[in-house]
Image 1: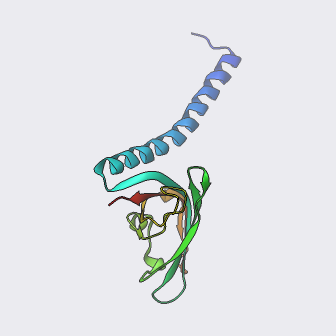
Image 2: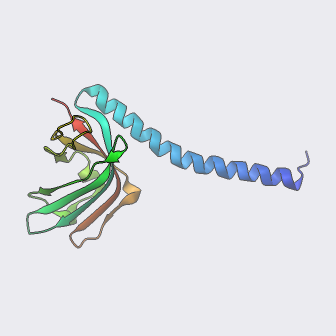
Image 3: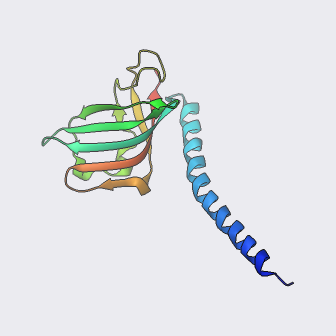
Length: 147
């Protein structure tokens, strides 16, 4: 079988595009699967809040948690104090399951907001702990806790 140069370039280009698409789709599918399994258990529910988190140590025992993201395509930003909390020992895995009481933004699950939230997914590749009292998590998924 003989390939012409244009044919070889096209096949190479198609293979590269398929690889890029796979790197995007696989993590998205994993997050969706996690969300569906958690929602099916009846403990957590959508709509999901998706965005970034910054946590800054403000005293020996307290840290400020700042979420900047969206819910249903609308801004869903909030901040709160975590106490007791040690930023320097925080990992992506330790943030998953973190309870955020009363932080549900208005207009997301309900008009008034104030529902309890839980961090369900932290994308490890976008997580940085500086070791100097600062954590940045570039992509997190937060869900509502249902009674």
